[in-house]
Length: 226
Image (cartoon, rainbow, N blue to C red):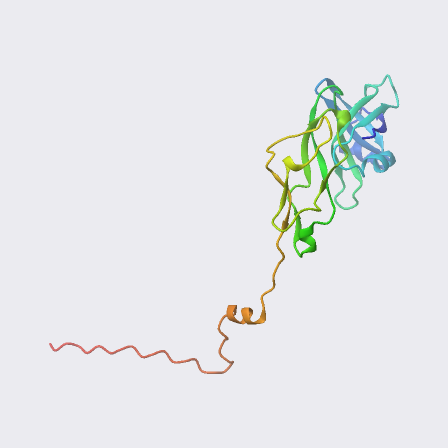
């Protein structure tokens, strides 16, 4: 996986007012944090964010380079994007959280699954049904796969691929049960035939205006002689 490089600027102002001013000037507020460093407030050029980060899929290693090497942002860091907040209407990035990683320590990340091929069960009329879209794995930050391919070509109807069936890159291990299903092929949906539909339909309602069938009269009970 190629490393993406982003330039960051230190910032000292916080709060909604300051964040709005930054966005109007073409900057995205953010924070860099990690287990071994004090959190640092930073700003990132909005164009860089959109061109280099917004399209990334899954967990991607990013090199943050300080525009001021001696500034409070701490110089160069290797990070992952932990969260990217977006405007609910425009989709513009409002805030970015960067998590610093140690390149020598393994970590848990989620990697997208790409299903390739056309299943024989789909050719026969079945429906390909992905169960998981991402797989959680453990690896070094430098070995994070961009995605994991899952070939579904051999899947027939009712067949499934499980975590244990996937071939992972060297140094990458799946987290969790190996029996979890990733994808399966469901049987085709069969429409009811006209005769079957007629049998399954409820009894027809009485025509409008027709008198309802009279209920049978209740038997009269003679009183006993007194």
